[in-house]
Length: 214
Image (cartoon, rainbow, N blue to C red):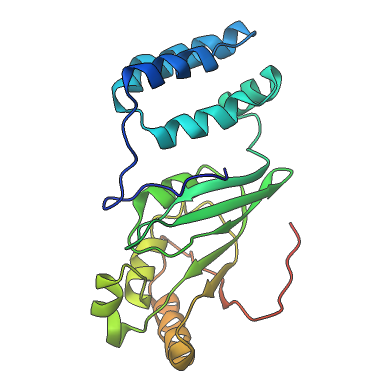
């Protein structure tokens, strides 16, 4: 969803005032009863928490045809094009899931520990994941302060992946002088720490010029 960056703890999205909320209600009126019922329940549960970021996302959903919107609400298909994913960083950042049909190419963006990202990934049919690991373990404190991943934290994060899911994981955003060290540390933990019985991750370094098809 293009537009404003995803909010972070240090850059929250402004709450909707009464006028903006009323406009959003009007914008979300649909011609299909099933959609109206879903949207009504959403407002009943979340109306007091909505922000301008949420309103922009809902506006994008309302641009869909009724039947396409209902397919998304019933999870009969995943969003096409690009879907914003949450990131945790020192400045506003966002990840992306780009789909072609059912499967998605997922990019984490700059992020540190991020349970919300894994919750969303586990809802998607992921073809491949590109995730940052900027610092080696010897600089894990710097990684934590700057809200980046190190191999030891990446190991913890990958445990959030549903063990029934299988997809290659590509490492990006490594500091050039530390790429070999980072990949060696990742390979060590992935050979010794499996996230569940007989489960290992297919982890690779993302090289310049690689092309992917999904």
